[in-house]
Amino acid sequence: MELNICKIVLLGESEVGKTCIINRYLYNTFNSNYQPTIPLNHKEKIINNENFNLKLIFWDTAGQERFNAVSKMIYKNANIIILTYSINDRKSLEKLKEFWYQEVSDNTDYQSKILFLLLVLGLIGNKTDLMDKEEVSELEGRSFAKEIKAEFSLCSAKENIGINEYFEYLIQLYAEKKNIQNSFRNSNSALFNDFVVLEKSIKSNEYKKKKCCSN
Image (tube, rainbow, N blue to C red; front, side, top):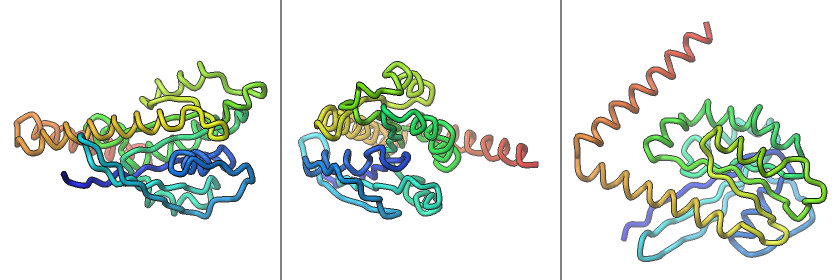
């Protein structure tokens, strides 16, 4: 069975726990001592089962905006993008809405990629172990996820709650989309050709809109 590459990128502010989430999933470890992430850091894992073979490449991005030009090179070609916030830090969610989501929207054509089974978008609220200090409710997180067509979950990297289940769900979802996409492509069906034409049309209209708005 062919080994497919799946690039997974976590985006969000510093100290929301992106590195801790990745380390918990990959190594089942947790380090409570905060260490700033270098601009780009990647880790890998291979999944083999009867349904698919995937090489997962996790990109852990620095949360500071000054590193964003470097991060763009990675998430433009990502297969799974996970917007990450901390439930005890309202500013981390607000920054997703004001900056990080807009970056994804502007630089990945994510709406058409979701439509054409090329991208899975996630939204995760970390640090449920700090529920007594909650500043963002689950309802608010779910509402934002619905608005941007993202797969939502809450988790705690510290207490190992919800991490494995969430990643397994997103990876399975991506694998299913990939299989559907491959089936369309291999069949050379009129439906797949229509998808290609429609995707080009969407991108053309998006370009015209940006060009118009920039004048």
